[in-house]
Length: 264
Length: 262
Ligand SMILES: Nc1ncnc2c1ncn2[C@@H]1O[C@H](COP(=O)(O)OP(=O)(O)O)[C@@H](O)[C@H]1O
Ligand SMILES: [Mg+2]
Image (cartoon, rainbow over all chains, first blue to last red):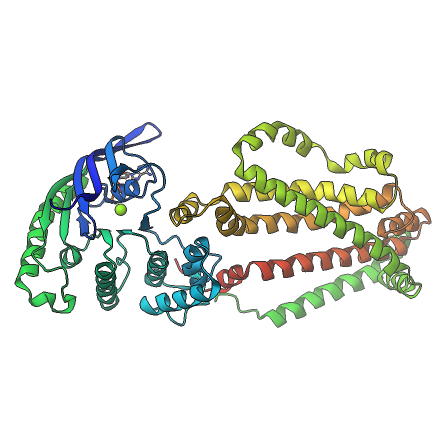
């Protein structure tokens, strides 16, 4: 490890108590994420991926261990992270454009700047023409894109993305992946990206963290052999990508049959 | 769409029903039931016309409307403010809960004699009575609305760096406004109850006064004419709330008119 970690999980465990039911979501997680790194998280559902993002955002503290951000423990809401949660959480009483504008209003940006920025972001996520629509009038995929635009509007240092492209069709997803990768490289963003799409995880990552559940523990951390600047359109023909994706598949499929065996 | 009946058709059906009721009333009056008790549409219309021609209707309706409206605005405003304050402050809500419940269980109309003692029988007494009634309804609805604000949405904007003022203005108020309007809508008839009961108890003007004096003179047609005027007043107050609702909650229109998907 060369540079110091921006985000560091040190022996992190989290246990939820709901009524008299106790759920251990994750156990002894040790992970360092460097500044500017794109890390994807994969693993069976319920293995605590969202929980790790929540703790990075400071929504709750770990039950054991510490989550460190830029050298200090995360205490309370972590304003240096932007979080796109699994559900879009758009404000139903605001139009799409007004939703994207919320963070700009909070940061007291001048009116003209807000308008230009919102227009550019709507264009970027392919929602131009839907400025005046309310979230209830959009499809699930469009709402996700609006939430992504809102996240990009406030330009946080670290992006926490929880299955951001899950509801998109293949074409749109590829476009969004390209844009996200381009933006995060250009602005040197640190990204924690949860996905259940292993090809996506392999395509985007500098490193891919594979979890096994439950409780969620880190099964493996794979380094991507791909260069930081890569052409997602040509990846299918890149032997290194194909090998990485295959390795992920080989790790995850035994867990799938295992969970299927559990539930039957 | 399952229903085949167009809106215009429905209006026609309703008119037919109304006509049928009026005709039955007119025919039954004096034949099946003594006219003294139920009057009849033609006599009520005549009484109503007299009220209009003499200018009495507008004078008294204006008095009642101003009382109801002023009480509605004052009670509504204080109710919203108190609802937001207590909704956001658990300490205050806990502190005041038993007192509020005690007051809530009291029929507010029973306070009328007290208000007469305090501020006399003028319009301000009706305004205070109306405001008291409206306050509780709007307060409780606003409080519930503020309490049921999505914690996820609050967290989302906190992550964007929002302070308490932002949270209030961007999340709490817009999401509670549905509840606020529910409170305002159910308050309309109560606002009129406040104003009219106040006038029935003690007044020399207002539709409640017209009602009481017509009844005192055994003028059944006059009583019904006054009731019709009160109904029309309620109708216009309701319409005002509805218009404000549409203006302030445009997203509700889009939610209501969109096709159902699940
Ligand atoms: N707020 C919460 N309260 C109670 N249990 C929770 C909460 N969040 C997550 N869990 C539990 O923790 C486990 C991990 O959840 P989560 O982090 O959402 O997994 P993933 O995102 O990997 O699917 C699950 O068993 C889930 O039920
Ligand atoms: Mg999850």
